[in-house]
Image (cartoon, rainbow, N blue to C red; front, side, top):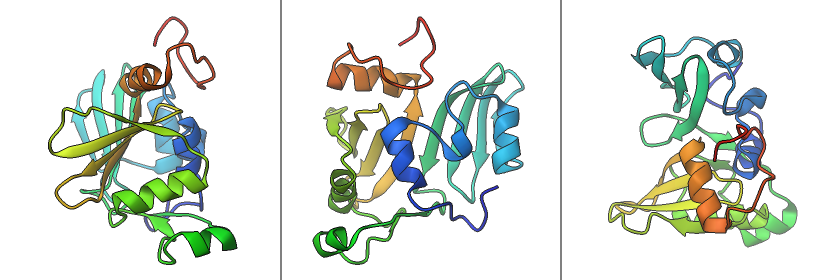
Length: 184
């Protein structure tokens, strides 16, 4: 179970690379699987058939339909999510020395450097927004930054983000894990 708002080092990097949430949870996992790994949610919006489970202290927002997870999100603005990252000695020289975790304090340029040093490809998406900057990773995870302060706002992986990623990187890719057969 996640404790003290801190999870294992590089867990978030793995999520950005492959869309697998903490504890090998992913899209289409069952709600009970989340209870087992994350414990009881803080708040529930919706009903037994569809809605969101909110884990405020970790910043997690989990959307579900019929007991199946359809969205995995980390809300940095509202939560206290902190994700330690390991960096090599070379990366310590190239990165700002204070980047030891991904949290709501990380700036756009710092986050993009972390992506680069972890060989995570990304492209800009949703260029119409005037309030936030959105990028999508090659593994279809969307990352949103506030343009007001340049800080990380949220990270989302869902069936919608898969469609955006396919649009940005080309829809011929079929290597994304846990894709529902017959769906985007």
